[in-house]
Image (cartoon, rainbow over all chains, first blue to last red; front, side, top):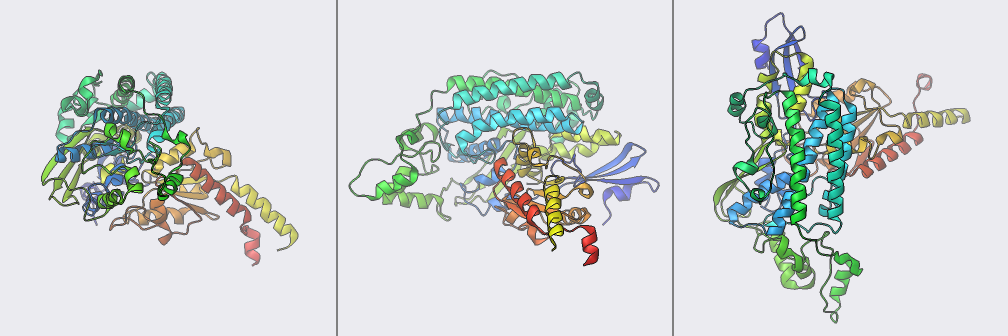
Length: 440
Length: 156
C-alpha cells in the first residue's frame, strides 16, 4: 500500500520511518518522514496502534460497568476521565453529587491533573536529555499517588468517581498525606524550574520550535495546556464551570508564543494553580469520618456475624474498602437508582441482596432516561468530553469520547514540517500524546 | 553435566540474572507503573535490571508493558526476533498476559499467542512491588535454567 507520503515524496528524498517503537514515541504512534538532510520536508502520522475498541465495548456494558474502561483512556489521570463520564451520566439523570463528594472530586481530580502534567514534563525533559527531571517528577508523583491509593484503593486505575458521587470517603489520614504531597510537589516544581527554565540546552530545543498560531490551534480543535500556550485562556473549568470550580480561586496560565517551551511552562504553572486549588479544597473539606475498621471487625468476620440469628447488631465495614456505609453514603453519594446499595443491607438482608443483584446484573442495573448528553471536563490534555446516547435501556446506545489528544496530534504533521529531525522529539513530548485516549 | 560444567552453569546464571538489560515495549497504562518501578522510589536497578536499552539488539529482557493490539502484533514479533539469545520475556499487566478487560476484535488475547513468555505479572496495572516480585521470579528462573554457552552448544 502506498501511503500519502510515498506518493508525494520526491524521488531523490530519503524516507524515514519513526516508530511505532521509537523510544521517544511514548505509547505507540508512527511518524513517516521525508527528509532533506536534517530537515523534515514532509510528514505523515499513523495512529491506531492502541485502538482497543473502547466505544464499541461500552455499548455492550451497562452504564455502571463501563466505568473501568474510562480509567484507561487517559491513563495518567484516570480520575478525570471517571469524572467526565460520571458528570455526563449525572446530566442525563438530572442529579448532582452531594457537596462533600464534589469537593472530594475536585481534590482528587486536581491531584490527578498534577500527576498528568508531571509525567508529561518528565517524559519531555528526559527525551531532551534531562534525566534528573524525570526522576524528580516521578518521585513527586509517588507522593500524589499515595494519597490517591489510600483513598481509592488503587494507584492509577481507580474507578473511584461514581455516578452520583464518589465510592468512598477520604481515608482517615488524608489531610497529612495531601499536605505532604503538596509540599513535595512544590519542592520538585521549584527544582525542575531551576533546572530547565534557563537551561541553554533545553531552551535551544524548545524555544521557538514548533510554533502554532492561536488561529491554527483553534482550527484543529486544540484545548487544554497546548491551546493555552498560544495565549487563548480557554479552560473548561472556567468557561463551563462544573463541580464547585466557581468557588475556587485560581488563575489560568497562558503562554505567548505557542512553542514547545510555552507548552512546558504552561504545564508547570498550571500545576502550581492546581496545588492552590487542592489547598483550598482541603480547607473546605471537613474531617473524614473515623475509620470503622478500628472496631476490629473485618469484613469476613462481619458477614459471619450476620449469619447468626441472635446478633442483630449492624455490620461494620471499612469506609474505604467498601465505602458505602449508610451513615456516610448520603454525604458522598446521592441516593437514587444510580447508587449501589449499601453493603450492610447487601450482607444482612435478602431485600438488600436482591437490590444488589439488580444493580449489577446485565439487563437490570441503571436505566437513565432517553436522551443525548455531552458532558466535558478539563482533563490533563484538555477538554475530555463524553457524548452519550441513551435509549432508555441499561446499556448506552452510543458512547463517543472527545479526546483532546486526538485533535492535538492531528496538528503534529503540520508542526514538524520544516523542523530538524531532532526537534520532533521535544515537540512530540510537549504535545503529550496519550495512546489510550488518542486511539481509544 | 559434569561437576565443572554445572558450576560454570551456575556462575553464568548468576552473572546473567544480575545484568539484565531490558527493553520496555511500552504501549499503554502499564507504562506508568513501569516508570514508577524503574525510577528512584522502587528502583529496578537494585536487582541489576536498571539499564534500559531502547534497542532490542542490545537487550536480554523484553518487557511487554500494556495492551498489544492486533495492529501492533507484527511489531512485537519483529522486536522479539531482533533480540539476540539468550533472551527472556516478561508479560507485564493483565492486557499483555491475556488481553485483560479488552476482550474484543482489536486486542491480542495475550502475547503468549505470538511469542514465548517467561514470567507473567498480573494486575491492571500491577503495583511496582508486583513488578519487582516478577523480576525476582525471572532471576530465579535464569539461575536455575540450563544455560547455553557457545562451546557447549557446538559440542552437542
